[in-house]
Image (tube, rainbow, N blue to C red; front, side):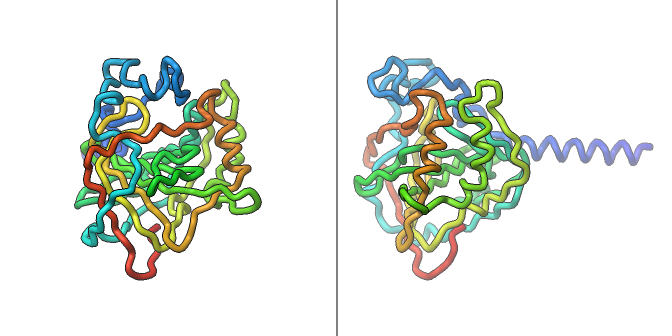
Length: 282
């Protein structure tokens, strides 16, 4: 009896520790208050006034390491190394957060090691148009893969996409389309269980990436986020017009263009890693 009790306690403790590792700390978690802010320029709750809406959002207006930024002034740093995530399939739920569509991983979807720290994949979501720009160029869509360390620090890997009117669909997003349609504009059903999703379906080709320290791009705009923005060199990621339309129509009114305006770089270090040989980054 004592051994069975000890085994049960061990299992429960292990599950609790795993849950803590996978759960983002509140300090770097995006707000769940869907209607408290908007992306409408000039509105009372528009992006220029996010820092005035709540005291805990003040850094949105006065922070010096805010995101997104224009990645025009990067310098090559070969020591950054290849991206080598250890992702795995995990149960997931598609969520309409009002300001975006999020795929939340309910199980352990694996991790990515950055500067010796393991960041566990928590969720991913889409912005249309892109939030970051490269050499002044904005893209049609940006995918964010959000990770958290055991200490609750955030790291985001971003991918940029170009719209293609005919064809050019994104295969990973295509697999989620039936679930997104079920929660699009449905106030009574904002979540839909998807089942097991393999994040390795977000695949890359030989590429370069930018690395810098920034913030969440939605309130509370917490700083200290490690950003990795992947830019394709010989291959342009594409998304179909129908897929963009689905993402834009699914969110609340005023959230169709859910990209925060560019923020000041403030002389931040922006590093670039360039691949020197063929290799899949994801």
